[in-house]
Structures are given as structure tokens and as C-alpha cells.
Length: 319
Image 1 (cartoon, helix red, strand yellow):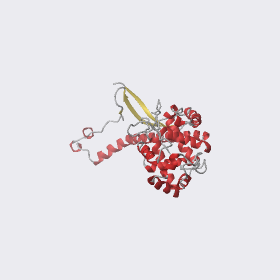
Image 2 (cartoon, rainbow, N blue to C red):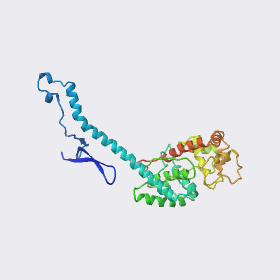
Image 3 (tube, rainbow, N blue to C red):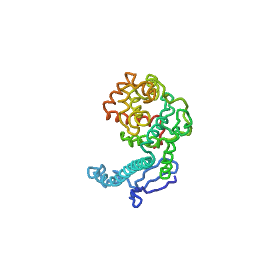
Image 4 (tube, rainbow, N blue to C red):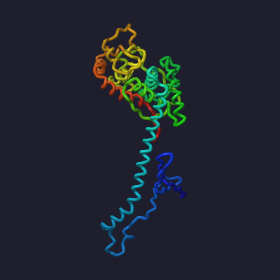
């Protein structure tokens, strides 16, 4: 059987590398076989007389002494490769963040965060469809996505820069951008995973919750996406930034909930009808009150709900 022999090499930088003296045999059409090129020590070979037929303590020590130097470098090699993979993911994440922060300002943060919700918000648990898959770039002409062309163009510029170094999916780009938008405005720091795959077509229409829904309908809508009432309220807190009238448009804090407790009238210019509806529902009101009283709790719950949101319906690269 034809085989190819290669030497395992770890590259720690562009200037130096460490080479492990292990040789691997990879058959052309069968699973790889590790060949340590060491002759196994057997009782028959070790025996020189009848009393030596069975390996004793001294033979065991000799066996371990002979094989450990071969096994340890292999183990160290695998650990080093794993560390290198983690390092690669971190460096890619930092690259994405760096380019996003060059183009996303506080004034543009709300639009970028809205792009996240409109991409991931199409997810349906029962159908296992939609979700965080970058399909929103094909859906910008839909009425519910009016105004998203601007944040798309902003991220398109950042993505083009990242792609020259390391290709990144739209789903990953949008996920990280939303997290950075929150952080830029003073909200919690949110770390999201990379590796999402992009859809090649738009998601089905009519999957986003309408702005006119009452609290009961909102809870039902979010339930079909796998989110609890608590997560619905926490994610709604993202409306604290932007031009919806909840405090400063560029500060991510818990002002949204404090103003909702004042129960602004339906005729006011504060928030969307769905925002005002939350304060009329007892279960939602419980969480609104909790978050109005404790910003740290809101930040922690928002982080968890955001990560869940950007993972909803995502398809991932194979490891």
C-alpha cells in the first residue's frame, strides 16, 4: 500500500518553528496510521533464559523508558496544535473587532444592533428555519427592514477589509458587530463564537414579530423562537439606544425600563407600540421592574440572551 511520510512541525511565528521527530504514515486510501518506528519489546525477545520469560519490574521500567520519549512528544504536539487553533480563533476575532470599531460609531450603533435582530429574528424552532445566517443581506428591500441598508453598507466596508486577511461570514460579522455596538455605547462586553455559515438565499417572509403586537402576542412570537418572557424583556432593552425616546440615544443602560415603569401613553412618541405593551403585562412588568432597579442584572441577562440570539438557527463550520 502506498504511503506518504511527513514530519510534524509547529510554527510558533513567522521566523521560527519547532520540528518534532515523529514520522507519520498516511495510506493513500485508508485512515492514517501512526508509525513510531520502534520495535515492540516482547517477552520472547527479552528472554535470555527460562527465568527471564516473564518481564519483571526491571523489564517494565525498561519498556516505559523506551516508549515514553516517543509518546510524550506526540502528546505535546497535539496540545500545541490545539493551542494554535485557539490562538487563531482569538486573532481572527480581534481582527473582526478592530475593523468593526473603525466604522461603527455610537451614532450608528443602534442601526447595527437592529441588523442583528432582523437577521436572527426569523428563527423558528419547530421549522428549524431562519436564524443567524446572514440572509438579511438578501432581504433589505422588505418593508420591515427599511433603514437597514445604511448599517449594511457600514459593515460591508469592514468585512471587505477582514476578508483580505481572513474570510469571514456575514453571520459572524453581524453577530460581532452587534456585540461591539453594545460595548461602544457603554453596555456589557459580549464575546460571541465564530464559525457560522451564510445562507445563499433569503429566509421566508413574515417571521419577524410586528411592531404593533401586544404583550401576549409578543410572548407567543418569541416562544416560537425559543425565548422566554425574561429573554424577551431583556432583549427589548436594546431599544435603550437609538431614536426611540428612551434616554440618551447613544448610551446603553437600563433607562428603557425606568421609562417603561412610567407607562408612557399610547399617543406619546416614546418607543414602539410593542414596547409600551410590555409594561401592561404582569409577567413582563416583573422583569421590567427588576431591570429598572438593577442595571448589573440587566447587563448579565442581556449578554446571555444576546449570545443565544446570535446562535439561533446558526449552521456551523465543521471542525
